[in-house]
Image (cartoon, rainbow, N blue to C red; front, side):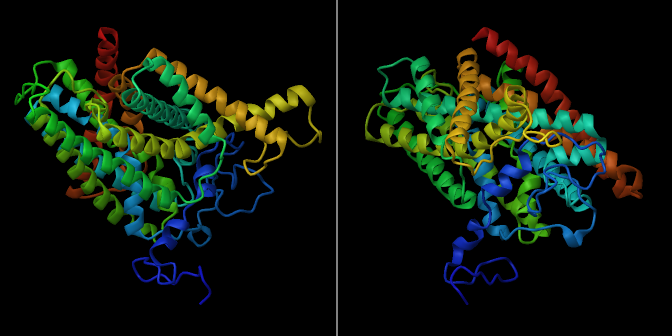
Length: 488
């Protein structure tokens, strides 16, 4: 067998001489880009294709194709490796605010909210899996909304997905800025925001993400090591008497603060926006529940361990900031932690930022080209530069679009410079819908009328309960986070 040719066993393990890494090399930037770049909805919601009609690449599946499972392409990623990808995607920035969430909620509500959201988000993940089984050609939320609800819903889903990616990227730039400020406190946070945006802009000029699976391993390493080092360092700081231990309570005493903390935990579970695409990259999409249950359980254990340990060590101490990795005292550990966090955030920018810039470019550039130069072919609309085009005009165009996006991100961070507020607003506005609300709405709309028996009632009630939680997170969460932002 030639090198690089993988013989996969029943569970998707690679048996060639490249072994473990083959599955990771199977998921790449082609798939991620093409599932989420903006394409106007077709004139007919049942059209077979909603993209470039001259393209025959099988991975352009943000389009609606005939419902024939024999033509639905699948990926090569085994479920065990997908578990790592999903874990890295979910943990990200979410874990960094958990100690403050615990301090606001108190011991019992914190554990309860964490576990309930684990159950709900696992359930909504399974609801998305069921939708994927019914519409296997729909490999993103916008495509699914187009197929089921029509063009108006497609546009709404597209805008909200990009808003979520924009907020994710903004949170990443803010974490990077706070990491730089913690390592080199000579400049104010505003200067570091500009510097972090500039560094992110440079990273985005690579315009490639060839091995998302491999990056997910680096992402996991560069978040877990800082977490462990930070917990050990914070424990040493408190035990030495250098830093005062805060209070611990069983129940918090502020409802609005509890709601803010709950939205922070919702943010920490908000990976559902890419679940449909990830299913499409699996060698056996039917194994997605294995990856979902495993990754969700790992995430729950990590979140409970981090939140509980730091709250037990430091309580609600005023010096414990969010992200908690910036709370360390000066020394080698602090600098190592900040350096690893900067690498971790750079990986997140590579993924979310590239998708976001490409979407913005696809929306704006064709019309701008026609406005300036007109159509080269009267019957053919202008197109954005291909992302693999490295000609001077294409490179300049990408640099301009990415600079605009990062300037908007920096402006948002200037307006909301507090990490807790930024992720709380993200969770209440967008994640409440993509993670909690949309899956049960789709489930009830598509499947409720065909269900029969007592178990069907329980299935419908579970989806209705998810929707109630989503509405509460959207309305109460947004209100509480706005109050918190004003008070800050």
